[in-house]
Amino acid sequence: MELREADTADIESIRTVAETSLAASYGHVVEHGYLEAAAEQWYDRGDLKEAIEDPSTWFIVAVEGDEVVAFAESYVLDRRERVGEIDWIHVDPDHRGRGIGSSVLTKIEEVLRSDDVDVVEGRVLAENEDGTTFYEQNEYEQAGSQEVDIGEGTFEERIYRKRVTGEVTDAQAQEVHETERGETLYVDYDEGSRGSSGPFYAVYTDEGHTERYGYLCSACGSTDVSIDTMDRVECLNCSNRIKPTRWDAAY
Image 1 (cartoon, one colour):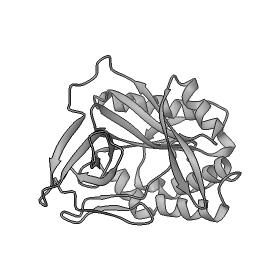
Image 2: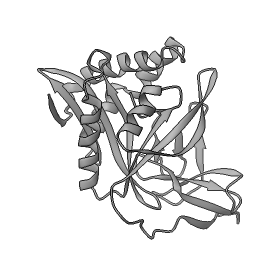
Image 3: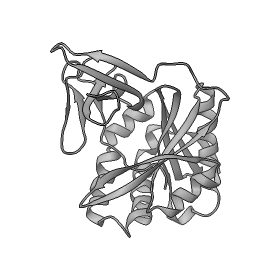
């Protein structure tokens, strides 16, 4: 098996692995039509090409012969710490149980460590027992959980983290932000999402972070950010955007 960076010739194989992996992992809890629509949205050919060619994205494929049998996409996000986020690890169902997923994860950790991250983070639905076991067996610890809406249902998503450096950075975790309208807001740098031009950070109206306001766009400093019903996020000031949310990071 060869582990290498993806290239655009791999796009159709990556889409096939994603579709079959999603169906195998979530067909028992998520309606099939929704899974098909999610795979098409998340692994759009144009978006895949953009991600593969993006120098700030680590896109690793596992290849046997000429066949892509697994892949992982990850990137770095500066929060309170420098976090290597795993967007997903997919393994073709016919090739599971052979350690391919762990090999891909080890490679992802290696490249993220070379990018000076402090921790690596992945997210897994609690219903995905194979996924939660996968991270636990690879020395990740559950660091929290949140609820996510998928189709007609609400699911628990667990956050798994693994420290790859010995020290916590001294970056400020929270900042007070004043809007042009004179509003006082609180920015949480531990709660961020990658955007096309820079991260978006969660913003609250209170210091205790109980009342959510929206997002701060780090690219231009604006809180004038739109969020639609499909969780697409876009800064109305500079057009920085978050791609459609993927609600799990393990096969």
